[in-house]
Length: 204
Image (cartoon, rainbow, N blue to C red):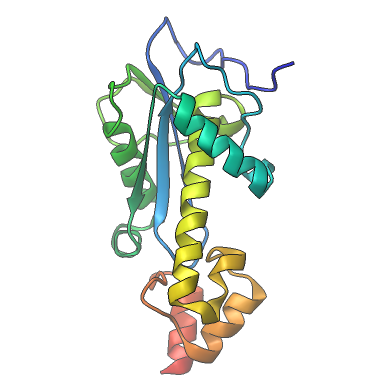
């Protein structure tokens, strides 16, 4: 039996090419913000799509490969740490999602966005709170964004091993905050976030 989300009645599908988009990484103190967009292939259904946060890492990784192999098209984009600091995290997440959707080929005819805001674009679209558990295209996008960002933070751990990015992926765990207090921030920390500012003042 399929566990995929049913088509949401709020979305006027009408056979349109539907893209879902979601982001990962608004809460962390470090690392780029990632977004993904996906148009699924109805002829190649994917079982078990769900909000990426509710899936184990092993299951997310398996679904990531399946989504990449079976989707009609998909895209992953980022908003850099510098853009998060300059624009604020909300506007950076809108930018990353816009980049992801604009990179899709074929171009979507309708876009479902996770959350309560739409990026500034001309697509027919709808914002859906908890959309990653309501629309399978958003679910797929949430998985791609989460896995891609986690892999990025694993790479950053190799460059900056003191902070433990391989464990917390940049989120404000006790170890992360303790290391910020001890040694200050590094180049991938978001300087506009209060714990990073406070740690750098402490170390100045």
